[in-house]
Length: 87
Image (tube, rainbow, N blue to C red; front, side):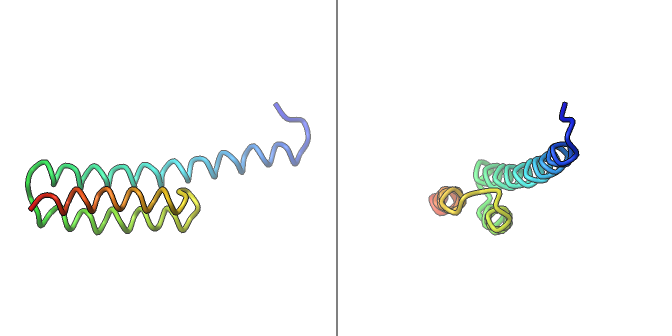
């Protein structure tokens, strides 16, 4: 355990940031799962709506620095490709 006051603060701040990042990543994963469930069900309308929500969640995570922009682009691209291949 840290003895210096600034080191103690760093531990607290890092834990707070890690919790925030974990919550954001979890939300993105949930949004991606909703798209995949809609694709598996064959519901094109629901898949498109879920894709919009997932894209927004991924972009928001990127703007907050949770994901690198290339990672978010890759995730969005793969989701869009999967939805477009339904037809």
